[in-house]
Image (cartoon, rainbow, N blue to C red; front, side):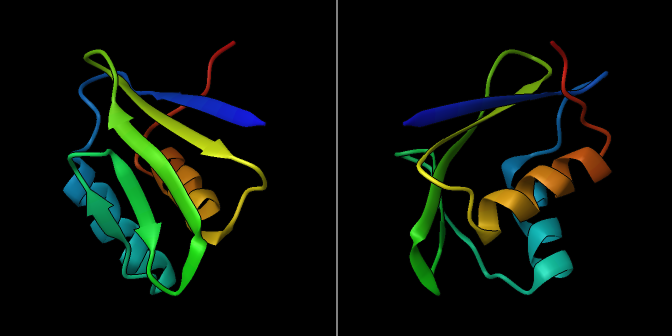
Length: 88
């Protein structure tokens, strides 16, 4: 099953580079971003991969298949720490 999450920001969202940097500082995961495919990957666990991209002016979208793994969970928490929020 495919899951999509949108994290909104009052102003512009942080850059993908800044998000990856903060996730690395928080967790020690040295994630790799494949910008041409919008994929964020965990080099330690090949199953820990998901799409991450800016969508509209104030939104970051995350799309994954299957269960939530470490990198996705850490990225979601980091986005919330960086001022993001969910909205119904």
